[in-house]
Image 1 (tube, rainbow, N blue to C red):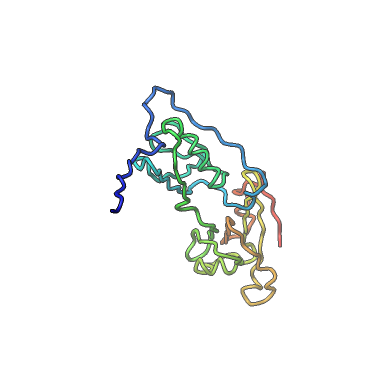
Image 2 (tube, rainbow, N blue to C red; image 1 turned 135 degrees about the vertical axis):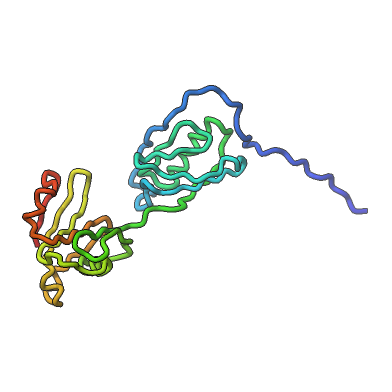
Length: 223
């Protein structure tokens, strides 16, 4: 006669949902120490505008998406404070978020996924047909970038500006002469564009708009 086993008793997960609500002052978690140059070197660091998807295994009511704000913090559902994640890897950010939720959940089991992020871009402005912000998808030159913006529109080809920001206080300005390049000559003068660069094509000479450039924080290099 075959043995009949009794049904297994289903127990609630040891990771209990929310703790008893306690009166506590809202806290804002300060920026965590940046990870050292070890196993995490070369990993993607979170930036403002990134969108994180949080999924809770045992407490799905807390599932939500949150965006990294300009100051580097994220607002978390059910918490009155916020957590700083900018500059952290996804794994380190997930750990900071778990620590924050441990104030209201017992041993929170939450997965954090990078749902969306700001794509690399460059900007073309001034006397071009379709100025704007363009996705940076690989190596590109100033002429190619301008072509993506519809081409020049009565621009001063000898004084195209390529602006590259290195920090809040330092912007390098390179003047590029594309007169010969547009005729298929001296192509070595066609400077490479990097992600984050701004290309400005003026209608008038450099001297007329030079006063509007904050030279105290910029270095100008002529090609």
